Length: 305
Image (cartoon, rainbow, N blue to C red; front, side, top):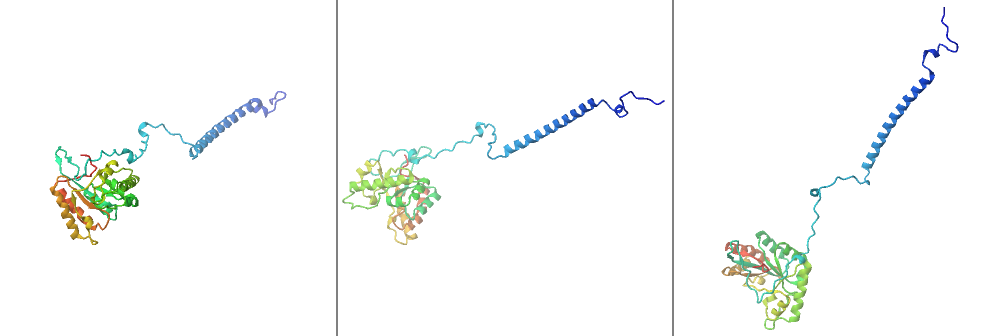
């Protein structure tokens, strides 16, 4: 006998679960899928945003805290030499003709020699500076104001190389020895050259050498300007060089300079300006060798004793 179905049932509906339960199960699957897609999309968008912010040159990057050791030291400003220079000492009571007396490391007095150069800066000044630099020797340069204004860079090199500067008047006009200096004129000459040296180097000179070695009328003016008046003890007469200025005259300059080897503290008069100084440049290395061989110590005239 064939089986019969209850009223209202068919073979199709009897083969699966009730319709209401099937629809609810499919809906949760879809929710899970959508949630998973949403999470993935959020991660992708967050990553993209982070990279965009990091790569944006206008966005300041976060910097880790620095330790004191990692902080660069501040740049030190270079001080004005005029502010660091010691004031000029009280002017010497008389005319200075000797190099400063100094002591060696053991405390014993040393023989000293001061090389001095007048009338510059001139065309030979760079050559003179080169010789002094190679020998490691300091010197004192008495400059003419007119030349100093025309060659301020040479004054700066003189100071940079460790030499001393002195005032040698503005124009180098030499009065008659019998008449001496006109007080007003010499005061103006010293002041103008003083200003030129300060403008070029930031340092004020403490020394004055009167042109021609004329002392009459200059002592009171020099002291009023708080300058020490410097002359020399050995005159090489290199200023009398001929136009050729060769080895013959250079040997004569060397011979005259050697007269100071009998002195304890000679001051040697040479020139780097005012004429042809080729013979002076040739003689200078030999003069240095002569004094060095006798144990002299080279000093500047502003060097403390």
